[in-house]
Length: 387
Ligand SMILES: Nc1ncnc2c1ncn2[C@@H]1O[C@H](COP(=O)(O)OP(=O)(O)O)[C@@H](O)[C@H]1O
Ligand SMILES: [Mg+2]
Image (cartoon, rainbow, N blue to C red; front, side):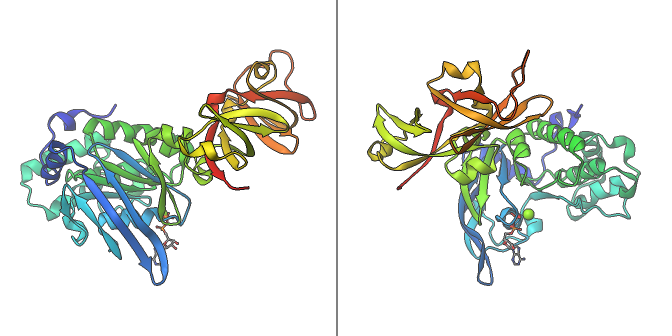
């Protein structure tokens, strides 16, 4: 269990003023406007706008090179912007040096001091702040308890596991009670099981302390599980920002649909548009998708990209009562323990189905013909484009 002591006795630190302000006015804690960074002629970050509210866990998610670390470095003050501004609780901090920004940072590689004990590593940020001996000792104890390392306070980093080292880095970043915590791929050096555990622990700490976190990852599962909101980045820009549900269920582009989760993306001709629904065809059979109003009504003859997640593709008898129902041939079948995955060829279009159903007598095999389908509400219109 995570210690609750630090919540109840939370000491007012330099971050308290900024936090109180951000809270009172219900204004964003961080405001980023037109923020850009170029290196020579190449654009690493291309005029980005977004807000972060108090208590939010905002994740920057994107492939390698999409600008995540650049954006985090700009907020931290390690990198200076080419254009644009960053405000913290209403004050422009774009040119404020990192140590005066009231922001805690945790990186992937921990960056602990090898010659210092856990206690001294955690206490390090307090050296630069005028804090009396008694308060210093109280804070160190709280920070140690928060990350459950009070029994290892006198060890050196080399005597700790990866997960424990990462907890030291977290405690060190939180000890001066920063207004915001920035984390750049903090779990990526840990093995899968530990990562799963730390994911839950970090989210618990964030919620208990009502921390504001901007978190970087290229791991979609991490982003979906931890975030209040996700900003999906591509080529230095934010492609979409929204709740995990919005990003997963209603992606605004082929890129987001494909990057976040497993996706069937169908390119299909629009036959008619009626009553707010677009009617499309696949292999001679019809299916429908909800149109985006009012734009798509004139779209007859254009092509639509429609997303259906593999877990929403039903197969066999269950598919036959659905309004979108097709027949295809199984190309592959794989067992995943908690589910089974099929690839099914529908007249040249490959569809993936992921089913957790139990096959009592016969598991469909490659080469067999099978029915498949989905409910209308599981089809999501991603994009419309001319033929
Ligand atoms: N110090 C730098 N000098 C030159 N180019 C850089 C520098 N830092 C980052 N870049 C470039 O900016 C782009 C974004 O990089 P980065 O923010 O590190 O992406 P991510 O963290 O999403 O992998 C990349 O094309 C990268 O090569
Ligand atoms: Mg990076």
